[in-house]
Image (cartoon, rainbow, N blue to C red; front, top):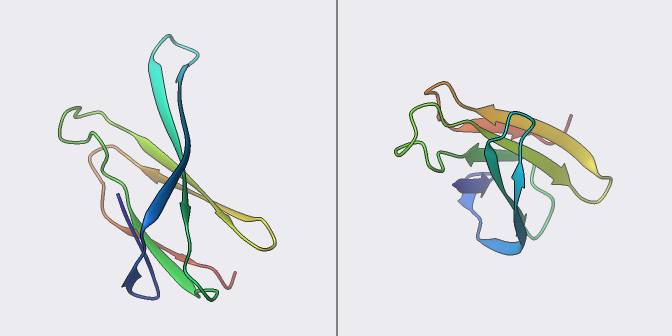
Length: 91
């Protein structure tokens, strides 16, 4: 997983993690990461290919919470497409 703000790579801090069961009996691993960009960025570029090499049908969902203001963005990485996605934080 990689995150960059306005083209500058950000470092993550692991805040929390857990394991849950999904409705069909599978296992869901979740992680809460915090990234600090210093001053407010205008865009974030996110790539999430966790476990994609091990599991061909791997799907990753990223929910981005931008503070202050608690603006949310959801990104889906799956179906073999793990390319980076860019979020415009001005919207």
